[in-house]
Image (tube, rainbow over all chains, first blue to last red; front, side):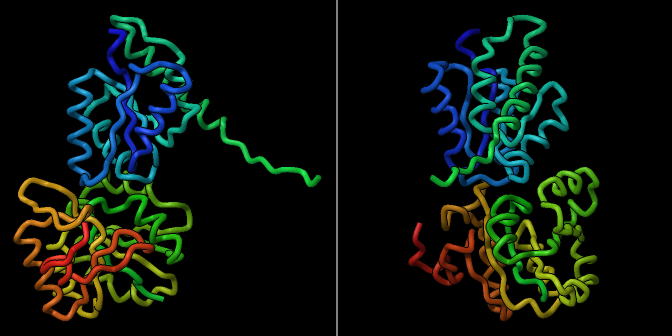
Length: 138
Length: 163
């Protein structure tokens, strides 16, 4: 299962593609995420695309870019009928790096629970990574 | 102030509306007119997640919107009124006179719709609906975000549309 993506990154424009590309560049891990975009799609089409990709790949974790966005609303609609998945919204690069670097979840019964725990950690790590920095006058 | 923007957008509450239009217009409220959403507590809870603090979100069926229109127009804050489809906006304009302009912000791909623009796909019925709005005296333009050029409906439907 090491070549099976275990999370979907869904965002506006090319943000998911960019984030996944950055994770691959930084970690060398290329099999952890599927990047999806809402480009040109209505609400029901985004939800259908997400459902299809989750069923096709077995992914149970969804990262979305914007809490107030159509991608996250589609994921939340899916969450309503799929209690076996989790959604992390407001995703950023530190969050995905944590998720990717936490290793492949064990095969078998504990696989989803392990992925959910790491996804929750990733949300915390991503939120904590934001900083406001200001230079000091020379 | 009043309702500054009447918009057709099948994504309803989302980034382009809340951030793209909401911030420059400094909106104080958004009215979401949709019969299905107005009847669903769960859908309303979902959309409330998408609105920043300080912006009120009102849900209304078409009938409720007609009844509430004057109060929203009299509101001192700028507002946005959204529908998710052409037919809802057409019903609203027919029952609530005074809507001078409608913005088509996003009608995305679906079976039976033909592409007119990257973010506008229309069925023949939807195309007729927009033409009927225009024929009724409503200025219909197509524009996803404020920085884009507002495209007249005629340009979109009758040629010259830039994809």
